[in-house]
Length: 294
View 1 (spheres, helix red, strand yellow):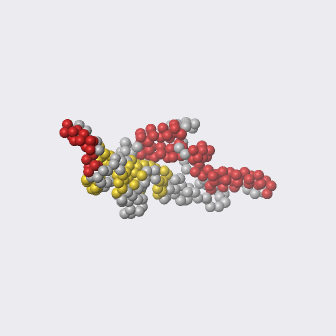
View 2: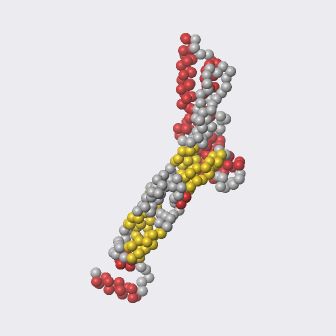
């Protein structure tokens, strides 16, 4: 695996803070984003490199491994174990006539993909690097199950996005990460969803919430109103003397339940009573009469 200087990729120093790394990443991600550079292969590659660097350096644990072990950071634990074993074998080799310097070289070569003319056994296989990506969608996009094509490492991946997926949810696409070492299995691709809500509904899990205006007369006398649900309209009967802030539940009119086909949450409608304005003299007179009756 060729060494990649992630600090150089993000144009930050090795002493950069988390905030500085995040700021640099956002700047470069915007600069090289495929949407702003259509059909630009060089920008697309830069965008991938910037994302890879951010994935490593934004994680304190992975950053430390990278600082300590460079291109072998993914195998830091195995490296440390091997190092401890080597030190132990070095301390005992002179006493028991055990291993030579060439043997140790063979051992490390087998671990990290090197070649040796004195290989003592089969090379150790390691799983490839896991990739992380973020997919931004609108709330309307995840109301129904649909397919979408993603480009990862110059490969197109066709994935199915189930209805009801939530903001911040992560799904794993097996085998679409980095290539394994010494014929080891490929890493996995983890996709985090960022769901933008540009609708009039507030979402909480499978339930939706909305507020509608109700005029004073309908609130007092009752009547019928038309309410927009997420994908249609329904008519509601308003009870006489409905109070401001009254909530009504519409069962099954909420958001789809994740991976539960045909099941939905509920829609909660809150009535906001809108007071009349710019009253005529006649209206004022009638309201005055009403106030006297009370």
